[in-house]
Structure formats: C-alpha cells, structure tokens
Image (cartoon, rainbow, N blue to C red; front, side):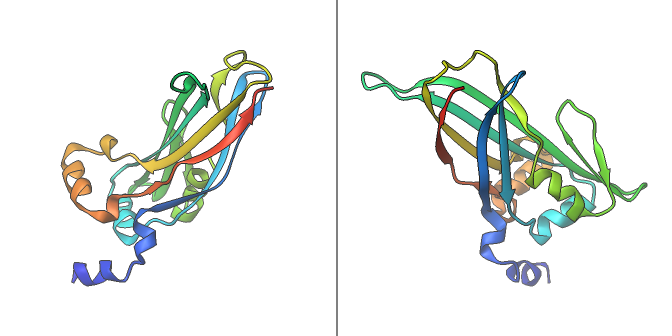
Length: 176
C-alpha cells in the first residue's frame, strides 16, 4: 500500500530544488546572500515532519576569483542550515536557522515559505572581498541528510524520496 502511494508522487518533486533567485548585496555588516527556491516536499517528507522528524535544509555559497595561472582563488565559503520540525503537543510547525530563535507557524505551507525564501544572511564580513574585483558566486541548496538522527540516515541514503537538492547556480559578482 505504501509503494502505491509513493508511485503517485511526480519524479521531479523528490529530488529537484530550483534556485529561482540569487544575488549578493553589500551592507554595513558585510556581504549578504539573498536567495529564493522553488520546491515541494513529497508525501514521505511531509509524513516524516508530521511524525516528529526534524528536517534540515542547507544553503552553501562559494565565491572564487578566476586566475589564469593556477586554480581559482577561493575568497569566501559559507553555509547556513535551516531546521523545520512539528510539535505534536502545540500542533505548530517551527523553523529556525541554526543558532537563532525559532518562528512558529500553524500550517506546513506557511513554515515552508521561510525555507523557500530565507532571510538575507551575512556570508562574508565587510572587506573580505577586493572592491572592483569580479568573483564567480556558486550557490546550492539541499536537504542535509547528515544532520538527521542516525536511524533515519540509513533510510534516507537508500530512499530517493529523501534526496532533495538543487544544481549549482553560478553567477558573476563584482565587489562593491
């Protein structure tokens, strides 16, 4: 019965995250990444959340400066992980970036908005990039299966429902 329920889920829903928007902004605190993603959770992941499994979504960014004489110079490498979970007692979904306060939501769809459009976060302090230099920024987002509880990791490695990731998106950025 479970196999027939999974067969109805479209193939793209299980493993594709589209990066719909990504750019870097200079601010007083440093350089911030603004990104948004388009994806849906399949039934298996929704059921896992509703049964108390915490899911982790990680965004990684790397800024490199091309060099003709050697490998590209890696100027910045940063990552941010956002966690989502459901509290059965309060019947609320909670979302938080690791190390920050959690926000509560009544529906899964409302909670997913924060994951699909995370707040702008500082990827590098001011002065980390050379002003006027052009860098290649590479962004990717994925469900981080390594942060799942150990028993869940075994299932996640062997089950395609638990493979949710984007392709790398690369764009140029000229430091301000």
